[in-house]
Image (cartoon, rainbow, N blue to C red; front, side, top):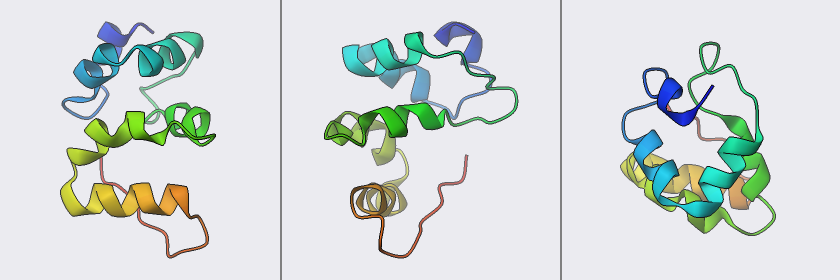
Length: 86
């Protein structure tokens, strides 16, 4: 699926933010993913764990404090788990 085809399945605002960030767009374009099954593409987080998590901040900011808590959880996985609602 292209990013445009995914617009109806992804949480509001995600496709625009992915298209604006060259690294997120590159990661998204490199993966085949059935967004009809799961709204949030986990490969974005998996690919960025190596030190580029700052690219997810605009997306996580859509979730306020919960998004910041989730970012911290991804950076420091030993803490209590936070789950984002789609």
